[in-house]
Length: 279
Image (tube, rainbow, N blue to C red):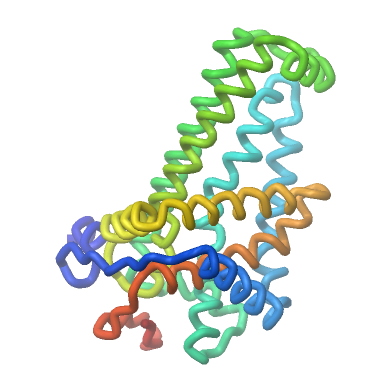
């Protein structure tokens, strides 16, 4: 029964929320609203988002050893695949501010008491599987071009990648593979986590809604993906510290993007264990 709830949600049936068409102006408005949320309670976001840049620094340092050097970029870029899950507390803060509820930072952990938590964990597990698959793919591409040779140093590694035909092939196929993984994650989760926080529809319905929203709005969603990628790159400068600003803005903006992409259902109310109504 628990497994069925994960897939079908509280209604014990497969729910398909209506999706809407949006335009470029809606993307800009979602970013504007996300920035407004960030400005409203900035103290919350330092608490919520320092883990992300710290984790990014840790990954970079951990992978700086010669034997792990080829995985440095895949780790850094692949970490962004987990972004939709990492920002889930930010969606909750935006939801509460939108509905006029208390936005104290402790409510960012309110997801732990959500009836949709099993579904959220299931979609999160899918992201972790994709993350591992990306690392395996990246390692396979590197091995195909350079074999099992271990780089002697950072400088020699960069020289091999940037000045040899094997390196050019690695860059080409690595980026194409990375793009494929990014498209899959974007298409399957663009509204999945905000939807699950708003309505306990189940993991399958949340992923299905994300895919349908993407297919109905291929250009706006692609633009959103490019904006996310660009801001995350900017956030890595310097030493990932900018992510403490970019992550909350993108997280809050994702909530507002969800509101624009998925039509509201006033009959659907999600009740938390603390009897705090949502929806």
